[in-house]
Length: 570
Image (cartoon, rainbow, N blue to C red):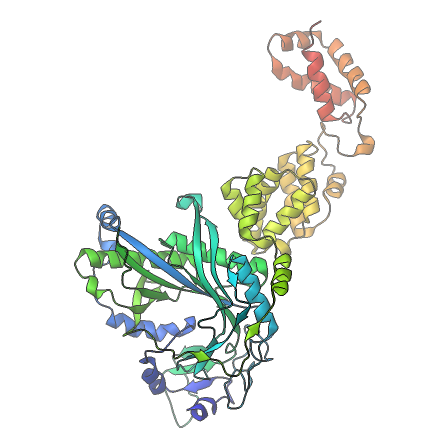
């Protein structure tokens, strides 16, 4: 079989497999499909097999709510994190996304006879970092195992993984639910984190002629560049109860791996992939219901919708007395139809015939090694959210700022320069966020430095410039860079009532008081009106003093002394 499989990895950089081979092997109970791009053909065939049930959308919302309130969803998630290492897990092939098919391969990742794997130490480092970040207990001595199953994108016929002794286990993650979804704080258990290698990727083409001797209407191609790429699989406890909670759990996993720097977490590239296991049970029942797995989830919003659909589908079957139609199976999320469809049935538990990997030694590290990695961990999303809350920010501000590690670091630098916390948050969440969205940029792409944003906030607070002028300056600084002080001076943007440049500012209270008393003595009528209740005339006196000082009087000091004199009893 290996000769047939690899003999064609030559001219086209793709391995061509006949449809007959794939059709035969797809019926195996040991199949595990990861490749999201391979689901098109499977979806079309599985849609024909799906039993007809009442579609959830056909029921009135009141009736549906009445049905759903009697059941509880039980959800667990398997998250596969592709690591940002320079090489693959067990060989020196480059780990680079987007390379031309079958160009980053060698005898080890192709599973050729006689090739021996060598573990990359970076995979262990990343495994320990993630285990600590998820509050897990670490195994100072773990091992690798062979997980046996056949699929055309798995050239060895087995996957190197960890079975009974994972690198980390028994942890938890804390998640804040956004206010628009009810708010609140949830803690989800982590069963285990284990190291393993990724499989290749199957691609299905609708047309092509790769041989003069064989003309086919559909081509099944395999790209082995991803085979052997290191993964960390995170298995949650079945603590999740809704699509919203699942999406927030997945988002938190993405934030954590990005904060740690172990993965870019891009779902579109397959760097973070989630498989959802879901069942429902009547409220109060301890026993779990029949578990269904959902794949093809390439966005957290899709995950939430898929879970909510599946909960509704199963609840309706229960309610109609057709609970026996809920079977152990893998279903795919059809984004276009907004529903799950059958991919394959599972006749029983998969027998992967695990046994210890004979070509790799045990993974052994010391507590000192763990402590050194713990000391190097950055501030994680949960700790950052709690710190921002302690600063007085609302939960919506907190969730926005902590969501992206680059935005959080930028914000921390801005307030580190002395900027007002709430003002800095408002600028980042409104005008700067809108600019980034419109220009399709990240915060690291802009020319405006944290120092200059702090200067801009200070200039507006000191009334050197108005908020309107500040926005105009902001967009120019974001696009072109420069300094706030330089732009104010160059464009003569100082308000008449401001004092921005210290060398020109009058800060002597005695001198300011003399000017105030002169203005008051020359304006007896306005003084009488002010003291009779027309307090808006304070602006008149301020303007006269600023005119006399040619705009150089310190505004804060001026207003303080002026109020004292205006309210003084003769």
